[in-house]
Length: 143
Image (cartoon, rainbow, N blue to C red; front, side):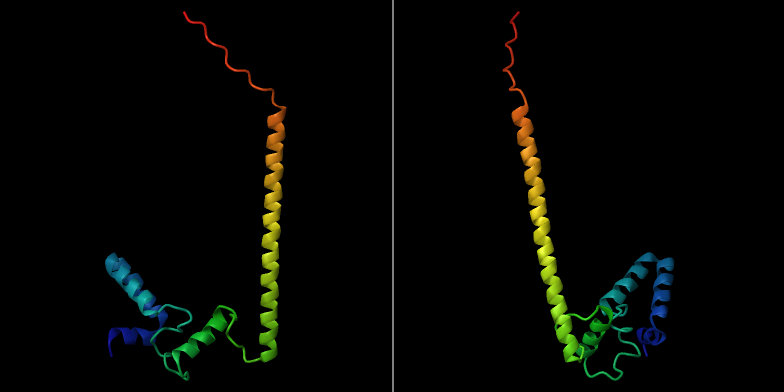
């Protein structure tokens, strides 16, 4: 058994401890371990510990585990079924309605901004027309 497997069996706290100790000992080594942890996926929440003791327990495929984790940790996303057809229809309808309300609200904000810009421009033009015309500069006497 190699070192990575032993640390996987101990879990994330062991990886974190090794990384901290390596930063204390020599920072490039700590940076290397951090890069390895990120690259290998050992620190991702949805991966449940990466390639450790939970890697192959009771699941048929990695895609199934990922879908389940996405639903659990990231909220139910479109395209992921909860298994309850009535709830899935309700969720889709609610999301559609919320997206429609968001679109309408953005259009309202655009109209509001346009009206504000127009009012400011009209105010600028009114002040500009009320200003007395500037007289041309008087020629300076030559000495």
